[in-house]
Image 1 (cartoon, rainbow, N blue to C red):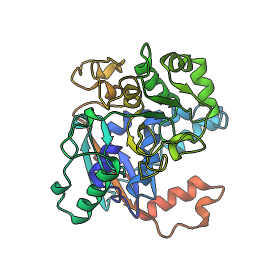
Image 2: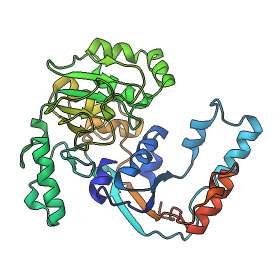
Image 3: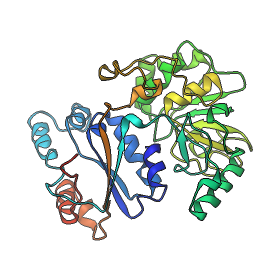
Image 4: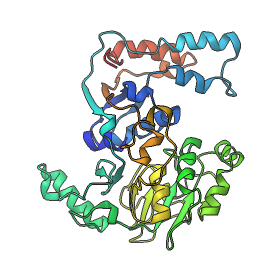
Amino acid sequence: MLAIIGKTGSAGGTGHVVEFCGDAIRALSMEGRMTLCNMAIEMGAKAGLVAPDETTFNYVKGRLHAPKGRDFDEAVEYWKTLKTDDGATFDTVVTLRAEEIAPQVTWGTNPGQVISVTDIIPDPASFSDPVERASAEKALAYMGLQPGVPLTDVAIDKVFIGSCTNSRIEDLRAAAEVAKGRKVAPGVQALVVPGSGPVKAQAEAEGLDKIFIEAGFEWRLPGCSMCLAMNNDRLNPGERCASTSNRNFEGRQGRGGRTHLVSPAMAAAAAVTRPLRRHSQHQIRKLPWQRNLPSIPAWLSHWMPPTSIPMQLSLNSFCRRLRAPVLAPHLFNDWRSWTKRVNSQIRNSC
């Protein structure tokens, strides 16, 4: 998602609803899709959507409030209709090739100021837009960084694995796989904060808490924690944090604190090594379709979709006629007719 925001800018979705589509999106787990939609607002969008498919139905099936038996089958048949109309058009279509996306790290003070972990910090003079140039100069001054410096040379003081963006069970598994058998680097404080009570319970049932604790991470109760500098979970002035949260604004994690947004796996790697490195030598378990892709950095193995597949992002006009009926008991029926009115659908090429 950081790569998308890096391409569109932090205001690229302003006034729109963002619809994510393509085989790369369909290859994602529900947790991965939730992260995308969660961060749609970080590009200025009103909302983020992914059309339901078998991954969605399997995720919902058997949950506490899900329909049962025949009711579930009927619900699935209806949910299958919540998809793109043939011939749908968009205000803007942005296409990214997923196999070209390396692990991303923010260098500035908004999610759009992001580069690959292997890149060097950009020079503000390279920005043609005077507003972007001034923003980059201000961001580098606040972050205490210099142009031309590799992000792999940047050492961190704290690590935060949590927030509504990246604290689901899949995120904790990814971080635990990196932390297993290793130790938090001297001088680094590392926090792991599950996203909810059920996630915490499941992680503990799988033994993830023990992996983190043995590695020197702090295993915390669910909550917002360092995402927004809650209580004592905050950065001191000048401290630098590798964080899996969704915002890196000035002072977001504490007055004068400096935040680098990263994935859960990269955050765990930063905790055990201290610099912001991708550490591709640490082999992380790959999914079956990834085992023939030795060149993909290890951090991508938890979410990277198949290669040679374009990932598309569709920006649809936000419906300014949205009214109370959409919030009524017949939410799905009303929402369905609403999407048809505004032609907010995925195009055939997805």
